Length: 303
Image (cartoon, rainbow, N blue to C red):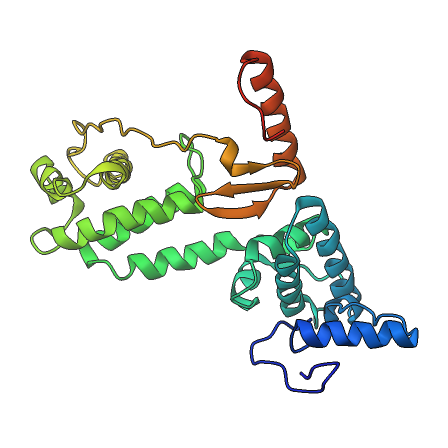
């Protein structure tokens, strides 16, 4: 790409909508344009907005509307359109897009969540995550020692699908639970051959180095695994029956006036500023109204 005013090459890695070398060229171009009475050039548009694909044009236009309604930055909208281009440009009209395809095909700088959000409003996504996670369960449990693999796979599938007494658990829950028990099982496999050989002393020893949420999550995962094994008759006794978890104090960040800029609809969290969308903006306004009504003497400089 070259500068519109002087014709020099723009620096490598420049934004696609960049037209000038620097502010000097932009200012000179604007001066000579006004002097000659020439109207300003049209603003840069993402190629997806003028694509030959009707599905891509519609989705990109909806991404602009969604971004404006929710306070997305221009960069976030452009990245969403990049992701939409990757999955829709050569797709026949009306053909659904699988969620796994969204996660694997879009560029790394694009947000799969935002792309899926745009497509969801157009009724285009097809949730094939169940088959994908089943394949993942088979692959991951296949790496476990032979004496544990089959039972752990059956446990994870029950978490995924649920049964007569339990509802299905989220994919995040499966990842967390398996991530907690996997290192413990691999360690036990050096001296044990099956879940039925694990004792309460083994569980206590394995949990002793863990602290805080790491310990709490590991206990929850082990309880779930051994309860399942007990119900299915895979073990004689549940070694996690007497496990107890301690309460973990939560650390909450207080809401302060320094983090809010209501006139400009900005919020600063942990030093990072971002624009407030319509929903959080209205929520904060309601919170400020309640604060004024409850504590009338409280300073309210943010409103």
